[in-house]
Length: 301
Image (cartoon, rainbow, N blue to C red; front, side, top):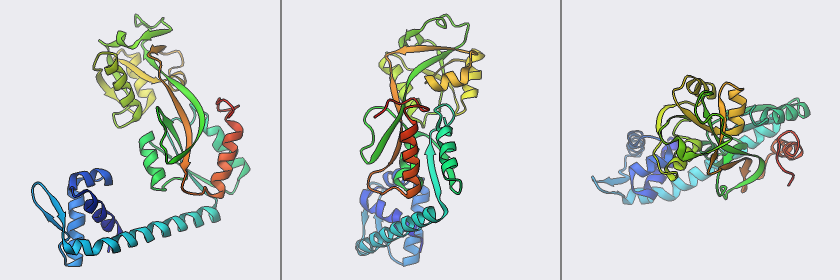
């Protein structure tokens, strides 16, 4: 029996909605339906009554519920114990990070940690901030460098690394290129090239434009900053990026202009509050605390 199917069963039982459950499980509704059907086939029992409007759990589904919870809980605990044992014995550290290691001097931390722990193995997973939060909650990484804006997630411990501001990246010959700061509404007739829409920075950029009275005309999205820069240089649009990313990427090939309203984000090293960090995680956190007021540019706590 696939334990994953039991997890899917529990989410459907809780939501009583296949579409909502699929969104929570980050899978398609068709995939989720197949998983439930396979579980029902294997058990020889019908677990849900389905209509076009409603999903309700059957008496056999109710019978399965407590066992499914116990099995999935035991599996999660065993997985965590095995992960911790491997990390302690192999000194493996899995770190999540936004795709900006060099721009925020995160590489400096990795180098310092490796010098102090030559036997350690460092695995880095690069993803957007919201995906990194999910990876932390799923315990697929030990620590994560996450960009935060507004209230931080309550279930994480946050070690502030540095701050950054949102700026506009313009072609050098743009009429506003010589300005230090511009009101965002002055870009209302421009085309925009942005980080992809499944990211916090993309949503933040769109929300700011909307708050400034216009809907941004987005003509291109890409994770790779050098591609965004090339689009700006060739007059295909303007970009909204964090200043440190823009300065690292542009290198005088495009104009960096501050925007109003000013938007400041933080880069935090995050880890789950409810889980005791492993020994290697504690060592990395200690190195980060030591270096953040010098190499990383954060204010001392």
